[in-house]
Image 1 (tube, rainbow over the protein chains, first blue to last red):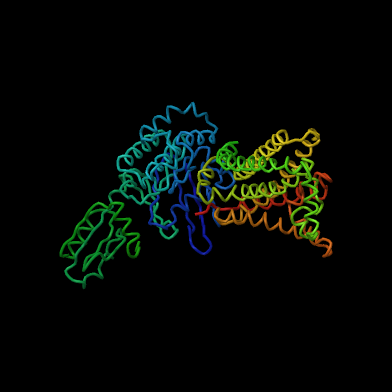
Image 2 (cartoon, each protein chain N blue to C red):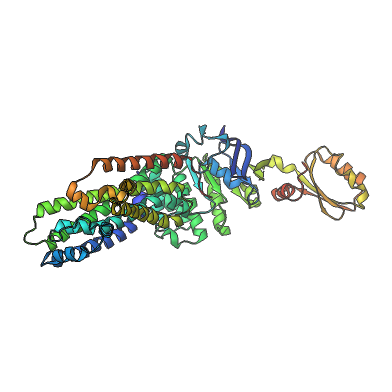
Length: 301
Length: 275
């Protein structure tokens, strides 16, 4: 069952593009990564989901409810960490967490244990005023306020920006823990390693459009990245036409080419033998290699 | 009512500053009354201002020369300037209500909570109204305390207090008109940096229009109608003391409030978060 279902969402800021016909689903209990370079449309898509922006076209639902009409109802069970955290400067952290709970019709005194746990994990001082916090500490408060009411869905926009590696680890440990109890998580990130380590699927967004959905489960890790250095440019025309399962061919150096291969090893080995290259490397495809293949140079899928 | 609570919390410092300053101002203004009421100060003023043109006198609110020996008339004169300050506060309060949080970015927190835009709108409006009511209550308290402090032997306390309260209701009413217009402006301003100049422009612009209309009403036919564009003229303290509230201005004031709120509401519901 889909917790988030996005259908052809389109948003332009005047003439400049936000997102263009974005479509994807996030399944119940999934940790879903949203990947793309700056300005690709990740934050716009997230803001549309939260009804912070109104779409020009298309529709989306969360928990089966319309994101525009049922926005307030959806947010009862949704926690959100913004990319840029701007909360009330003269409010103390404890007051902010209590206010968030009251907005969710929950009594702060019933959540003292959770507040204590979150503040302990993320090293948050509830007595501090928000304006006195550093960028990283503001982010930690944003994470705590998104988690404090135990939502069923958490949307995080670049949550690790400004966090030190230890807190990043604690964050993902905690997210994986609550995910085991059924919380669905969608987060955008530039950090491909954290997406690969934590997500079951990821969507790549480029210039406002979803260009690829990646299955990051072990099943999908059979994809290889083949780097090949040819004897001369003359044989380049052969690349990688004989292989039906090859994709993302790129020129990466002088007579050096890289492509992705997903399939049985025999056809690949036969192909490489026939080509008799100067050198070649075959390695498991990482998310980073796929990211580079999508965003660096031409996308030749 | 979480938005209301949050909004009142955010407005409390501004309210405290404005109320304190105006409380002291009212008190200091009224401290002049014993010297104005005693002796021949009133007569002297009448004689000295006789040389002024009627337009000039109208501009300073002296066209129907107040009797400064009566505390409520002195208060009414003083209050036209206090009301001007109150109108600026109300316009600022209204104009900041929505754009303030959009500019600072804190609105993203509110929008991410399970609360409808319409609730945010009306609770912010209510909070602004409550804040301005509290401000008006502080000024009323200052007026009544100063009445007790500076009354003369001849002062009829109950009628003077009743007159003062009536004037304060008028100040609150015209302030609310400015607050609602400010609230509408808050939906169309691009940044809170524009709020101060817009609110001041709105209040002083319409006030001067009212002065102009009153000053030249005898010379230019129909110019008096410009007072309809000046919310401060809907409840001028001296007029309220003499004639009470005028139905046409009360109705017009309410109409301006309703139209401003309706326009603001329709714009606000369609607004995107500023990126």
